[in-house]
Length: 567
Image 1 (cartoon, rainbow, N blue to C red):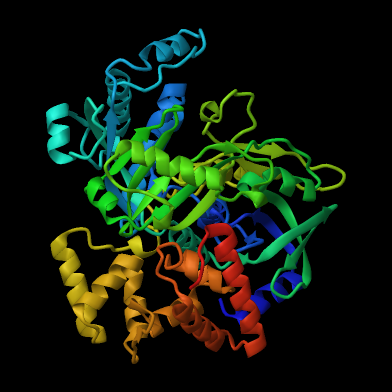
Image 2 (cartoon, one colour):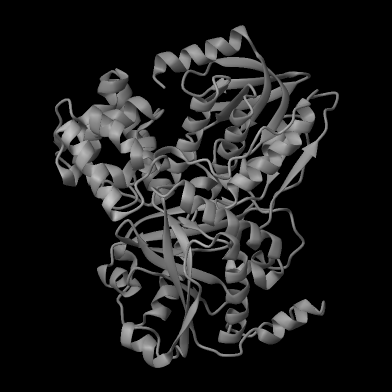
């Protein structure tokens, strides 16, 4: 959406403020319900005060998983639903969702079993054994495999003996007695996947529109006031219903909507991206899921060629203030160093960090780990101050977003007096449409696009990896004369221009953090920043003084939120 079409969209709202559904929050939950609304051709507006997927949805472990650990706390329905949704994502978004074998190093055979039995008998967890043992993990993995059986996409779990373990990974902690390996999945570019859902929804229905950088100001009667954060102009809309999909910000959003609530108890999860080839090699194409001395489950795996480690789980009151603290960095580095004691891991290797706040249901649980990870759609009926109901999407994770959106949509259908027309279970997402799934099919796709555009095969393969079958559109755009960026050997000037013109980039950090991952992967320096800023200014037609302010804004965001210093 160009600046002109953005202004046109806002002017249309001025002329016709009546809409059926306003969705507030363009993270993964908001995108999921927005696509459901488009499927039913409901006139809907999706807004976010920032960029698409810039809040909690930008802070996951880049995992698409069913939550093996949740079985320990009896959340069987959530795990069953998540296994099903994970398998659907492997089918519907194969360009971004990839299988990932996950290995659990175990230092005990029986640990945690007694505490689990006490929970099952309703006697409380007691003082849990310091580490979960092989038998407890075995129970969980058997159930995990059973839930995956109806639509199995990946192999079942397996165990390796101590001898097998150290033949493959001699650097593991010597106390390891065996390992368990099962399959989940990971997402290459989560923010891009979220954006594709939104673009798909708009293409599906002319009545569905989305605007990033539009904030909710307040509600009065049947009117909701919005503000364009790029121009400071206000516009009023009159929705029949509002979906609050603002995650950790749900209660604050509800207050602005004149619907008081206390639904959320957020916990902070921080992650680090490390430049450590030895650690990447030790992962050997797998995720290592390991337990810390305080009973938390952490992870390490190679995300886009760099080592990612995480995460923490700390209660926070204000999600806007969530940052990765020094203590968290030390904690995560110390935890992974305890798994691989012979690998040198220190702060000098940190390329970036990112933090998300889990929008968990308000809970009386004594520990953050015991707080439920399930989700629900809470309905607040219309009142005198706000004459429309609010549907708050409480909880939720990346993996079951489709099911959660479907559940919220079912509630909305009642409100709108409509019947369900279909579902999104088999609906491919973005560049997953027509994706070549075999090596032979991929070679044929790449060869065809290469011949049609004149781009070399390696270049087309890169575009397929980054964008799925949408890469053909990028290739066609790049065919009209292109050059590699001076500061980045795998991105080109026309590719960046395509993103800037077609993917709603309003600020430079949208490009650096969410349409690409160059800032998180340690690939950004002062020269590349200037090169991308110049291209940004060229596309948007910004004058020098406005670009200078944008440069400073971007540098401050990278430093403050991601510990990225531009040298």
